[in-house]
Image 1 (cartoon, rainbow, N blue to C red):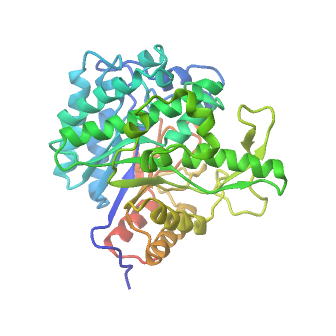
Image 2 (image 1 turned 90 degrees about the vertical axis):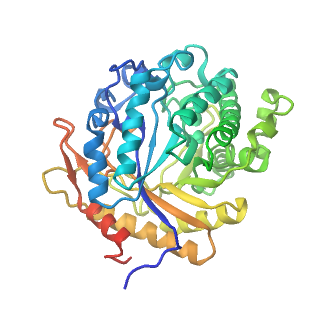
Length: 439
């Protein structure tokens, strides 16, 4: 017996430009903020960089063929802003633009639908030197960038995402120094939140104007925030973290208001008409979800909270992330009721550490994916309007501050040689899509 899914349900895999492409100094590409961070001592595990990563820039044809062989129907990827606009604005780079032409054409020839994300964290360093997301001018720069991609690829790409996980890169990049550009500054964090929201809004309008039939959304990382203890201080910390993590972007983008817990902080940066520019009609809600977050009070931290630890007896992945599929089910149901938009799960996956060898057996990943996909099916049965599910990730890749120590791929990558080997989970996911296995 095979699992029945809604008609037109989309299965896919996700990646991002900096995490897989490599070729960071080739064919006119200039540095991103992650190139800079990787060269800052102590910021990335083992001193790893994205200089080569999976070498997807040179091996994209092989990766497309892998997806075709696995019968993957859809592929979410991002464009590297500094590859197509090396200075972030101004002169374009034809060689960089042509790379994505070849990628998109290859996907379509293989029967794979391209899902293009404008921004997955690799801001051109040239724009960071001008203030980056703290400079309100970036709203116009992002609109121009969106227009460039829309005009270039809109004849072939109809599925668009504006920004990936804005809550993550703003909180980690401007309040915790866990991500590029590595600031810990209250004003910078608040400005970045507001300018990212504005950039999203203008990008939605730009894509609609230039791409007939475009389906546009934003991708949000949402999960329950749980106090580490029963103390009032930890409860307050969890509420504050929830506001930044879960509500600072969907609420203004879809409801036209900032959450009450942040409204006073953000008020000084809002100009007349801003909220209308942010709250533009979206076609779907992109959800990235892995597991819950545990929060604790930390008076020394910028906003008074810090990451807490999951209970010792909580189920965890090999990299220590808590596994609670029922919370995934509940999140899908809540989102569907709250925002009344179709939901695409644009990332979900399981990290591991000790995967080596020519034949990769990863039962922990199959177990995780099975549990979360069952939870998604339960959410759909309860009325959640879930239209698709993308695994993170197609390939083992550069996992930001963890470097290459965490592996999320359905395909094993030998980073010394670039050789790809499909894992058991990759075969399992292919069989699931084809209806050859049930969950």
